[in-house]
Length: 131
Image 1 (cartoon, rainbow, N blue to C red):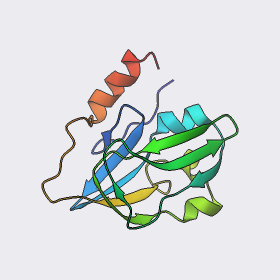
Image 2 (tube, rainbow, N blue to C red; image 1 turned 135 degrees about the horizontal axis):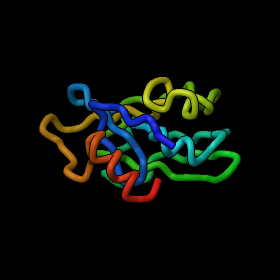
Image 3 (cartoon, one colour; image 1 turned 30 degrees about the vertical axis):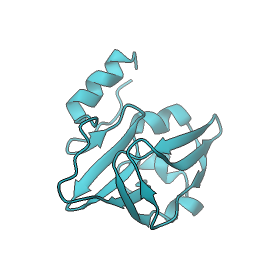
Image 4 (cartoon, rainbow, N blue to C red; image 1 turned 90 degrees about the vertical axis):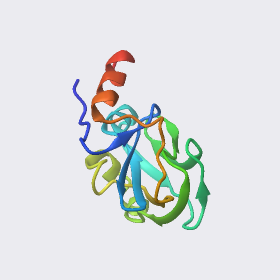
């Protein structure tokens, strides 16, 4: 199966994505992650103002199959959460890179996480993992 991997986004080894616009990084789960979870029925989002370190859990996604933690792709402070997911968790399945964004995190102007992969590296990672 071929999962959608968006160019211009960065990816974690735990299947979260990050898209930086200025000093704000939008984050969510990848198409691969939503496909593995199947029908998502509940999302627990963090509080605005919470400080996160890269790799720290920030949300919980519950599906008919499993409960999974989501991990921050960057260091920073949460400046927005996608409250639409509270009433429509299925947005994560329908549009993981668009309407299914989970949080927006403000980062330092020069911040970069060297552990994040570009789209090409993430596709190769999925293949290496046997997906």
